[in-house]
Length: 232
Ligand SMILES: Cc1cc2nc3c(=O)[nH]c(=O)nc-3n(C[C@H](O)[C@H](O)[C@H](O)COP(=O)(O)O)c2cc1C
Image (tube, rainbow, N blue to C red):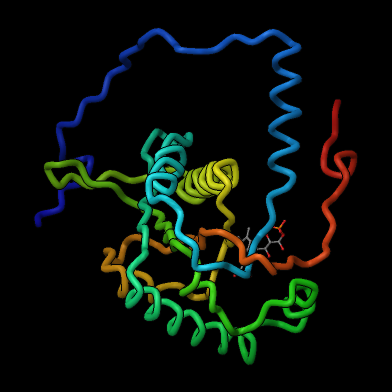
């Protein structure tokens, strides 16, 4: 494929406004909805023990479509989501992730990092990569291509993909699906196993499924609102 850059191209984008579709709510409704949402979202926890119970793939697809509605720098939508349910691929991912995690826990991580992780009870063993219903690998894209092969630079890639992942996790939680934000480091093995181009950077490996009935979570705290919010 011949790659043309933006400066070689004849792309001309123009402002094309349309009416906004927006739901104006009463203050009562705003307060009610914000409280309801808070009460739901505050129950989200990172789950590390999964059952093998199935969940509908459409739930995952809807959540990814929600993620794809995220704002992004210059609307470049610099993300790609790979949904993995195939057992053989999951085994390969687990083996590669555990290899990286062994390196991480034995050499790469500083003592300070290991100390920060201690309350979470994490270790090199990652059974959830095979037991949870789905893995969703999220890739961030530094460049996008038009159908004519013209390469376009993406802007604020990391911020945009982070926001999309926040929506994805929220949508799954809202639909009753537990998640684990997994970041084996480095994650380049995901390009090889999932056959993604090398210019896509693995951003997160999201584990999604139902918690096992005996699942436990670390007893950790969150900051109070007054500690994270300043009102001027
Ligand atoms: C960017 C990011 C990377 C994370 N990586 C891992 C990981 O590799 N393994 C893991 O068990 N948890 C991982 N977590 C989950 C955090 O440990 C967890 O969100 C945190 O302890 C707070 O717990 P909670 O999500 O239950 O509120 C990650 C979270 C984020 C946001």
